[in-house]
Length: 319
Image (cartoon, rainbow, N blue to C red; front, side, top):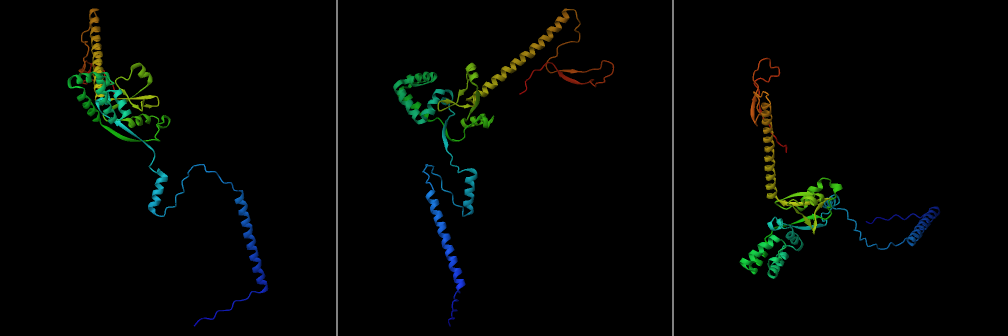
């Protein structure tokens, strides 16, 4: 059975008056707020488009995975920073021993340079070589095997030069004031090639002594620098051979100093003997000769009796 609805209670005169007053206040407030918004919109200035193309704000992550991705981007970057692709050639005798050839290789690339040399040799013969030593060898080879065969052989030789591609962060500008002494290590790291040793030179050193067998490292035709220091490179076996030679020369020089000192001691004793002075029991001590303390009467408060030690002069150098 349907329940009977209760009849609505009629508002009394006082309650009806209060309801009408509240409705009038709400309508008045709404009208005031609408008029205020119209005045704000009328006074608002439209900003011109500056072309900034500001990115839209990222939405709040709705999953744990999305939250971690957003955190990684904000904390460590997006990982899409601009980089510079650089090709490093070598190690190879042509690249290492001929700075002119290496500069041309870095400028034109391996394939273009190989075919360029092939055409140049066919047209100019040995004079196509930039290096005098290479030109001399090319002249002998052309005379023996013919220009066409040598042009093709040299093309294939250039195409065998090894190379590797490295990515360098374009924003990684080496600032000496920030990196301090680490700038030398970072500079070498950016240009290191297998089998090479590196050394930095000042302009004053190069002006007075030259590069001393090293080849200046160049990038885009300019010598690579760390601050005011210029970077040079040399094959590791050459550096080691030069180091062994210098060590041998130093050893011979030290041996000569020791021999000269011993000869001076013998000469001093001979002069004393010629002057009538007694030299009995006195002789210069050679290298590694053993000197032993023996009993000569009396006490031995220092405890030297019976002790032995190597005598003579020995000259060395601490590393």
